[in-house]
Length: 79
Image (cartoon, rainbow, N blue to C red):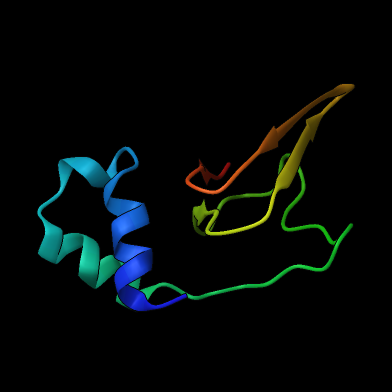
């Protein structure tokens, strides 16, 4: 994905939609991109948050106790 497509996707999602486009561009440019393999863990419940994660593509499963929720592109997840 290009920087411009990342900016467009982020700009349509809260809280980024509240920011000026230039701010969203700066955030998108400075983000670290991570790709996970199927079944790989991004973080575990209870870990201190050092960042938030914006889902650009694919699907992420969030599980706490016995409750599981799937999030799709455009979701912002964290602690």
